[in-house]
Amino acid sequence: MGLTEREHREPSRSLPSPWWLLAALAVVFAPLLVWIAGLTLALPLRAILFAAFASSAGVAIGLVFSVWAYRSALQSLSDGLVQAQDGTLQAVEVPRTADPILQAIYEDYNTTITTLDGMFALVEDCQSRVLTERNHMNAVVQVLPAALLGVDDNLLINSSNKQAANLFGLSERNLKGQSLFDVVNLAEQPREILRDSFLYKQDIRNQVVNLSTALGERWLSMNLSFVTEDEAEMAAVITLLDITDYKYLQESVYTREKLVAMGQLAGGVAHELNTPLGSILGYSQLLMDCCEDPVRARQFARTIAEETKRCSRVIQNLVNYARKETCDRSSCQVVALIDELLETLMSCRLKRSRIRLEREPSEEIIVDGSCGELDIVLTNLLLNSVHALDDVEEPVIRIRTRMLNDREAVVVVEDNGPGVPKDVRARIFDPFFSTKEVGEGSGLGLSISHAMIAKRGGELSYDSNFTDGARFVIRLPSVSRHEVRE
Image 1 (tube, rainbow, N blue to C red):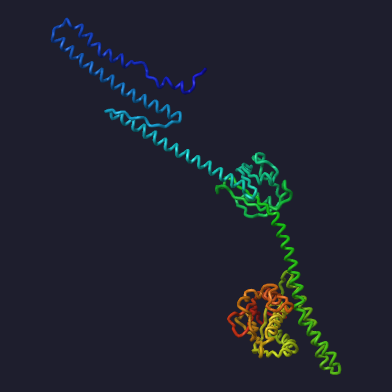
Image 2 (image 1 turned 135 degrees about the vertical axis):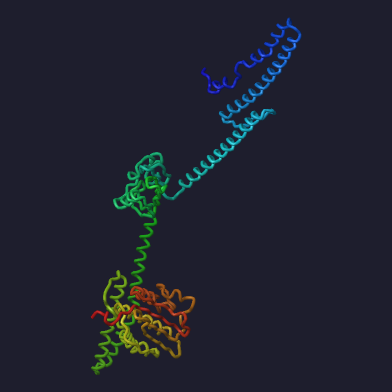
């Protein structure tokens, strides 16, 4: 059998041949032999030889003990070093010695061993913590809801999780070493985004991609982050979160919103056409009763024609509201529009409800956009005021128009009714919200009006500081007379 490494080291720990003992004996016995040989000499010479012999013997004995002490100390240190090589770091026992050099060697050795033992303990503790953190991070990676791929500088996959294995139909071992672009087989556009990300070293955040996977065609949210900011290093981590179910849900919500919008449009059309159709019916009956008076008949016929045009305008504006907004250069004379609208209402609704109308004289005001939508908004506000004044003894509706500045016009519609309760003021512009009784209102008038004004770049608001009834304020961008296109 061959010798082990430790057995090879054994001779280096054993004491060498006792040359020092032979030398000491020679020092002791050489003078003794000389003294014996000198017995024949005279007494003074023998005394000198005996003194030399005693001195040599003392020196030899001191040398023997001194060498023995040093060799014992070195032997102890040698044993400690052998144990240290085997992984056992232990301080040696420091013997009592008068030699300061030997004492310093022992102390330095024990200090070194103690320091090394502390360093090794710290390293072992760090290794244990690193292993614990690695296991913790591995557990976190495995329970992530997203597929995770780690790539190196050559864009080869060097790590993955179970979700990635399930998504691509490959085990984690088989994924390792694969090219990223071979595994993640993207369409051209998202593939370019991924390539540019590595080319310019830019992170990717929530990029929605469509990918054919082992689970079928899936919609994924892709995120990419680089490990370091060094331009030369391309190592990165990529996550792919499956959002297919969310995508289908989103499409379902979009479809549902379209249906709701269609319902709102249909309800708005019915709501807005109710007033002019009522006027047409009323004037038609009046026309039948006054056929003998051609002047009044022509007046009623003219009103019927205007209300019919108004119905057409309502439908067209509601359709335009539902469509994508287009730019035009139309404008509207606000005062003329209000006069026309009040003439119709005064002839019918206001007189029938005995509502007093108050108007403040105003200069001509021209606002940007057509009159159709503004007609719908003002009709809604006036009809709401008429409804709110049913139980008021002296009902009053006030309409004021003014220029707030050179680029903004203001229209105020207020009444002396009960006003809007404080607890519902924040909801009055919500679709399908109404303070009227069931069957008396669709809850779309103010909502559509608010949207129409906002689309024109204006604002429709309720004045909560007004305490004598309800006050609605319309702010619209105005245009000067020379800006109006003829």
